[in-house]
Image (cartoon, rainbow, N blue to C red; front, side, top):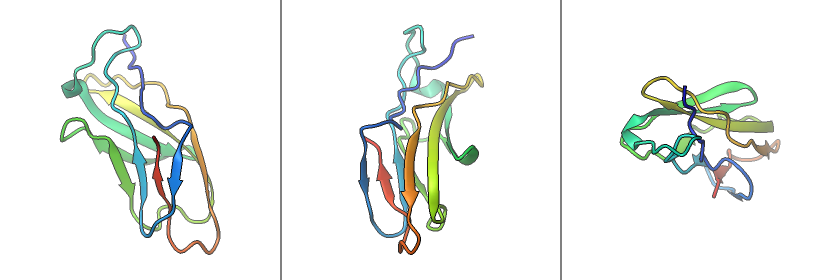
Length: 118
């Protein structure tokens, strides 16, 4: 069974920009399996983002080359968060978790941050 090389860029270095009303995750879709066999974008079914061990979102890879997710306002109440991403193929093969991204939402912050990982 092949596992996908997760090239999801939920890792440091990162750029965090505070803005009104959304929390955005951005990644680069993988192009190969861990053995360097090519991975067609049509073979990626979805991406999964987990924060603090709970599933935040499952994002279908339609249209092809999906690379962002914007969490709705209020998704992240004040607290500390650790988020990771996974890629799932159309055959149901799941990648290992990406490198974790850690962030804090401060009490009294007017809205969740826009969080673009580059």
